[in-house]
Image (tube, rainbow, N blue to C red; front, side, top):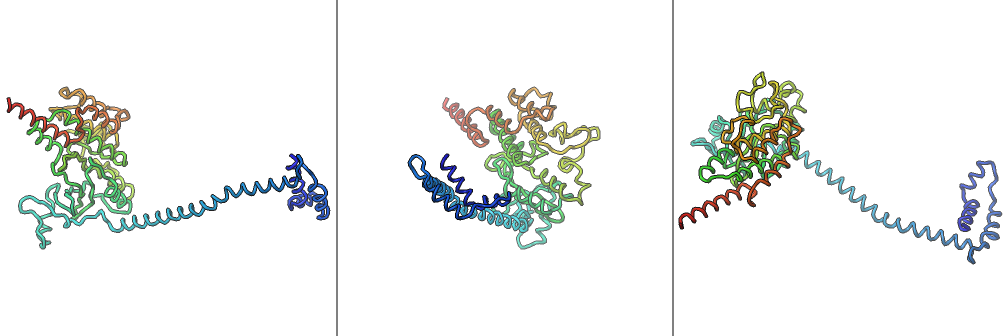
Length: 423
């Protein structure tokens, strides 16, 4: 307390703020002579516990100054480092932005149609050095053309939204995102867009083993595929769709025909690009405002009866809320889940064209999975992550992918055949 009193007296006698306060209150500040007299005759002679009071004051001030140095030094060291790091981050962000803008300007998503070495049937192979013949032979008369681009096996598919498709900066960003950042073992890779003779094509990874239906038909004719094999197929499809949904991508037209098998016996989901492309075209292209008021499913699936009925299995994979009241609504995540339930029916039911509620020849677990995915109330449908986890639990053995399961089946059949031969 004595030290604090001495410091206050010293402040009152020497501080410019104290003098200013005195003058503001119409008082005369203490003169320098009086200040010196008080300091030498009073403050310097005062003691506390046997020690001079001013010595204690000076010691306290010294400790305060030293304590300030303990945090000033780290700040003096760290502050320049923080500034350098911030500058580096700013330079890096600017550099990334410049590279991204250059990437947009380079149109890396645009693929020259004649850079693709097509594997056309019979005499329709591309003939080098004859551009006229090439143009005539490769004008696509069929839906898809298979070929090789750079080191990739690709397939060109007619772009269903070609009549409203227009490239602007937002569309370029979406194309680059799909090309550079969307990659998953169960999702077909997107390479870019190509065009010829006013026709626009989507260039995608080719799956050598064709559609899942053809693949299973060929495999089932050689080997008796058990239910676990089909559960693996369902789990792989759910895995790919879960990834697309995590990337904020909705398929919208998921069906068993959109599931292919590549040369490594891996399930690939194809034609997943349309909803994202159509959405960005609709949001950015005002000139196509009238045409893009329709759902993207109008381009992918065609028309629907005015009474809301499909009259064709073409729409059987769409959720009821999407094909309701004669209008095709916008695709949704819940709609993709419903379509996945239809795929489960197609994989396990002996008569895939049956109505969902009429199927009674499916395994119990498969029927349960289908029922969960095809609930009438879209809010109650599970996510693909939940479905995949449940389906994986139904797979017997440790073969969790299609190729492993196929090898397991072959080994089992080989063992049984050798046992039968020995007997």
